[in-house]
Image 1 (tube, rainbow, N blue to C red):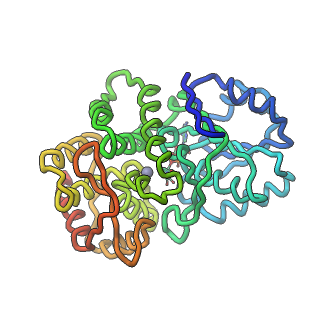
Image 2: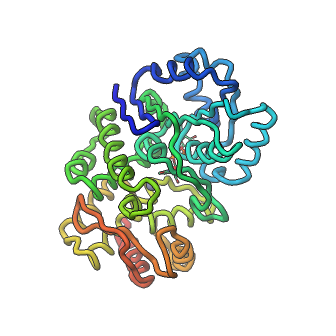
Length: 356
Ligand SMILES: NC(=O)c1ccc[n+]([C@@H]2O[C@H](COP(=O)([O-])OP(=O)(O)OC[C@H]3O[C@@H](n4cnc5c(N)ncnc54)[C@H](O)[C@@H]3O)[C@@H](O)[C@H]2O)c1
Ligand SMILES: [Zn+2]
């Protein structure tokens, strides 16, 4: 069992629900709502209820799975149910799911009656190491990713590795993208651990997850509201990665978040080589590792304008200039680096050429 504490919020890893049990006993909530999607209802709900019978009386709100539902229309439907269930300030919202549920549920909890308490129980690898850590909650708007959001931590983030058992392989690979990113931006040792993950052998996820959370928290705690800048390094791979994700949303096709940002990391590593002193040797190493885990998805030239259009809306931009977080070497990332549109498009050309 691991416990990471910061002010009033806790991240608990594999404690057999003891901490949550005590928390629920102590607080005596008027209502408990469990927000989940069709998959987490099927694979995760029974497990938490069997472990915590106190949750048997919870109200269940189910949404359809997938990024397409992380929007304002879903929020409205859920808030309508909150009103029907007479949810008051002394109610608790439990977000049981991947990043879509914790991002959406966090926002819903923060805004309802100016905020009710919420807990995250992430059920995907990406949720455990990233989406449920750091307090960012958001929904997509008009095809733009995470356009409307708020920064607030849940009272507890409860991580239980049981949930990884039912998780499809492609979702494990999605989380892997963020793990690779942590190594690249902050910790070369961690990069060496993650790049050598071998899916044919036993993987000690609990240690990897614990280390990943410590890295994310170390970065976020220096700049919780993204005011000073350092938090921006977490966006490495995401400027182009989010544009790729948005393009897939626009085309109504599926790409996992981790896969999109891994492709983004290939493009942004090439830009890092061009303007931020990343060595060619390290650039090649990054491409080889990412290609070991993911296949390139070619971006057709007819979509280049769309990609730029999405990037122009990136949250790191200001004064109409596009800013990136770029690597200077493996384990070190700098931010607020202006990049011209032409260079972005060449980086996508370079990524397309790696297609086999
Ligand atoms: N807030 C943040 O800091 C942050 C960071 C990274 C990503 N995100 C957001 O997270 C989202 C992606 O999260 P995700 O990859 O977890 O996606 P997701 O929530 O869509 O989950 C992926 C799929 O796995 C299913 N699933 C979840 N848990 C399962 C389980 N235990 N067994 C079987 N199936 C299960 C879901 O139903 C879904 O179909 C994106 O919207 C991204 O923007 C947020
Ligand atoms: Zn991400």
